[in-house]
Image (cartoon, rainbow, N blue to C red; front, side):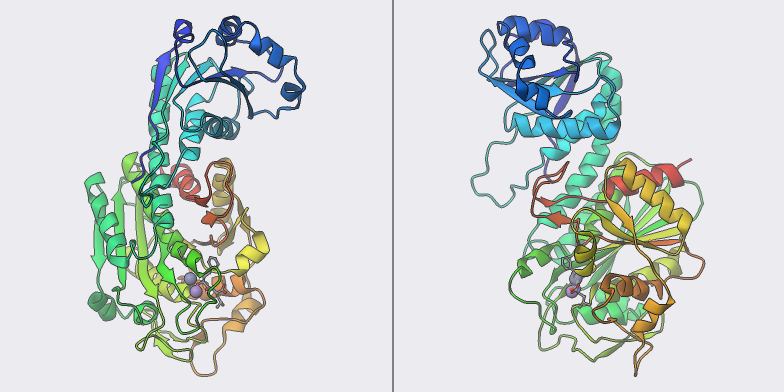
Length: 488
Ligand code: BES
Ligand code: MN
Ligand code: ZN
């Protein structure tokens, strides 16, 4: 797994400033008030900081952003980074400020003079998250980015808080690695093996193979994978940190590659479909975080692993398959495969665990990108309380999420002439009819959320806390939901 950069917390030592190598960061409030470290750097650099404070660049600088002063006189450091930040930032401001430092520091080692500024653990989380780089397939990778030493008051207390946050960072990195990994490496077998390795963290991991899935009657899921040489699987990960209450179930779409099947996708952009296991990736990342921080809750993660390929044995448009629920589905379009996988995994989850609530995540529809772009995931739910709690958790963690409507008229679009339903509803409201399809596999009394993450799982430009590529969207929001709703 990609390792987070190292962060150390130490008691403030102004005398270390002159000799610190790499880069040195000082924090200055928007009012331009220098703390002792700022004054010391100003003195060492013969007034460079004071001159900078007189500049237009400082005046125009947004809070949470940085200015770099290169090769300062009187210091060993190659640059002084000035971060404009108030003394008491809220968590999200602190994380974004940490991300700005990640950009300014580049590969250098960083000494941060944080003084008594609040939310320094959050700042370090932002720094770590934004420093992520996926270099596994570079034969000559750049040197690993240097770590950071943070000088602050009460370093032990900040370090303890930061350690808890690093469980979140590790979960996010695990998700990002999975989503970034190409499909010839991350096969269904390889994915399952990476999850099985999490047994060492105290998770109970089971892998259900094709013959078992057949016995369970998962005809919808198996139909999707039948054109691939990689075997279809369902992986069940249990974290039992609570009492004997019913668990929260997290269900992920794990299509390791989506060619569209016989309803083949166009060549342009098809390579992006290595991320079609993004929902499964988020479930895996959340389970990792929960185990690392030994969450006091019962959570079960279930993912359906398949590859959607065209082949002599592949499913055809017009085929009718039978789901584990017993209802039949006419497969109008083999490219609407994610819902077929989820239908069976969701049914199995309810059948076996009778969960207190169920959240599924899937890179399900291109239509959600048309609707919400790359800023928000689509949130669909049969339960206003649960949906509101999730939206609040996502807002707290700075992960965009937007509620979408559902309703009978959309559901009617799934009627089939020859089977119980068809797997597509037509061009209109494509994300909603996909959600309606999933809703048919939710038992009446199960509070449920469907998250369509097609627009947010992997993006082509950097985001607040992630470089280009996989974002890990959802790990922090779901970890927050577990904390707020499922832990004592
Ligand atoms: N995996 C795709 C959805 C997707 C598109 C994810 C773009 C990420 C980026 C999904 O399996 C799919 O192909 N959906 C079809 C559904 C249609 C055939 C009803 C789509 O969105 O075009
Ligand atoms: Mn598809
Ligand atoms: Zn897909």
